[in-house]
Length: 248
Ligand SMILES: O=C(O)c1cc(C(=O)O)c2c(n1)C(=O)C(=O)c1cc(C(=O)O)[nH]c1-2
Image (cartoon, rainbow, N blue to C red; front, side, top):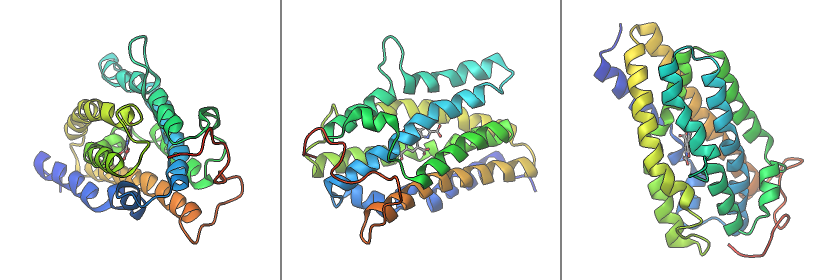
């Protein structure tokens, strides 16, 4: 049976409550100051790959949209990450975090040393958005419903526990606190408006679950590679390399 708008929204929010990556043990370690400097660096290197992927998936999405109004609403997402004349953009802000933890930013931007499972997960997100229905593609972005809480938590935890953390190094997350809510308000309304049959509601919910898997898998990869007993896969970043200084 098709759910009411309210019941369907509650179902989407429940997916976050059960599956969002704020529950992953690696985030617990990171936010409570239990990560070593090298574990923080591994997170920065691998998460850069996600940052690199996001505007590509938004461009893939926009290439399929036929309505100018939807493209107009979506395009600020690309500018938020790639920047504009006035706004340096999220990718540059992420590289500032890389500087702050003592990594060579050119190495981070080269995306060498990224774990295979991180690549597989992020690349799967781009393919999903390219190949599935527009409804599923928009629904997959709705993990951002849950992102402001984790960003606020992260800012607080990193500031409390790590010397590298300050307004400058954490500017990526501060900025997302205002960018994400506008995107997700639009995305949620669009999904609620368009998921008007049970079949579409099920597909949208499955898309959101898929996306929680994309996020979870990245942290599983990090945990397996860099938390004892650590197994860094061939080609993965080796702690102690590509540093600009020893700090963090
Ligand atoms: O730090 C996080 O936990 C987190 C999660 C997510 C998310 O839920 O996908 C995004 C972000 N950050 C983020 O900064 C971001 O720009 C972003 C864009 C998207 C998306 O799917 O379009 N998700 C996320």
